[in-house]
Length: 128
Image (cartoon, rainbow, N blue to C red; front, top):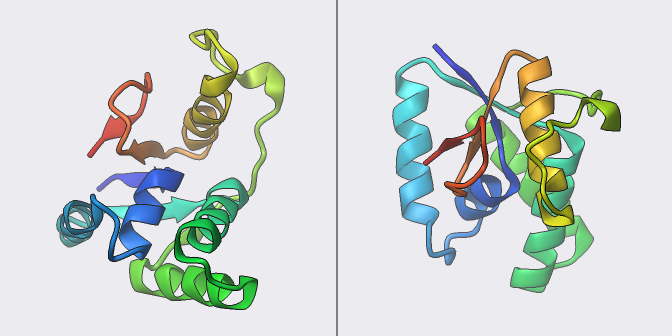
């Protein structure tokens, strides 16, 4: 049994049916759940879903928050606090675009999880 911190891209693909990776993510998460794996989110990831669903779907904040609640209930998400400091970021970061990915990897590790993402280039994460 593995506990996964879901990356924003996984959460967005799961929540938005029109997303190009929706079916792949729904199937992959279902399979992992059947194997006893658990899923987590943190405030940054939740905010990412809200922000992207408002941007992509043109929905209101009220509907975006309802979407987050629906996804959380469907996936039985555990919430973990943002508790990693910048000094704990991994040294593999080479540019500013990698800072959030690196933060999520460090946060996952600090909470006994593994970051689950659609991005195949994040060291220490598992790509779907």
